[in-house]
Amino acid sequence: RKEVEQDPGPFNVPEGATVAFNCTYSNSASQSFFWYRQDCRKEPKLLMSVYSSGNEDGRFTAQLNRASQYISLLIRDSKLSDSATYLCVVKRSGGYNKLIFGAGTRLAVHP
Amino acid sequence: SAVISQKPSRDICQRGTSLTIQCQVDSQVTMMFWYRQQPGQSLTLIATANQGSEATYESGFVIDKFPISRPNLTFSTLTVSNMSPEDSSIYLCSWGTGLDAFFGQGTRLTVV
View: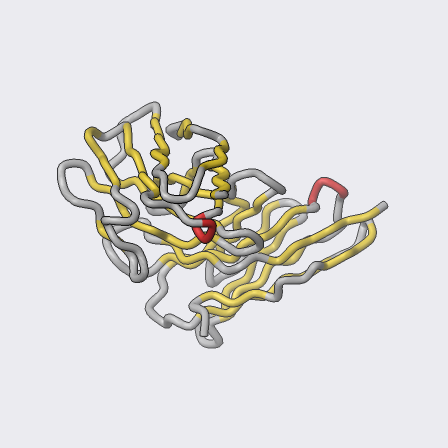
């Protein structure tokens, strides 16, 4: 079993739609959680960190459920520019920034 | 945040040869990381590069195949040795704070 699992998609949605991505992780000692965005043929870039209390950044809302070892990302009012692969990322406990990446969920927003 | 420059951006190499990928950071960073991203897959950590000591390799990766140098706090290299078509992949360097990771632009390697 992979340490971080995501639905690979693709999710094909119209502009303006709301879409939700889910992610589960297996290591209960994981301490930090992130969503990264990767555009085609580009490097990953941080979209947002994920906190137990949930956090929102404009149209994006991230939630963490430690008991269920589950992370989600909600995108409201999808834009064409949201089309990308969204990577669920978990930081292992330890002294440095060792990140474990999910395989990513591909989102395609169409007009 | 520090900016990473990675080169080459892409290369096509003959099997059995080696390729060295370079990453330059524009400020000093303690840890640098090397990842591989195979076609259609996510990123897999190859090793962590520390200045002044040997790199720490993840399970499935060995120093003879992926030697790493870290001569100072702004530079690192990864060599892919004795390449085979299975090494065709994107290789990315990275550095991070406790809250974020920043990546180079990646090296797209094709082994023929």
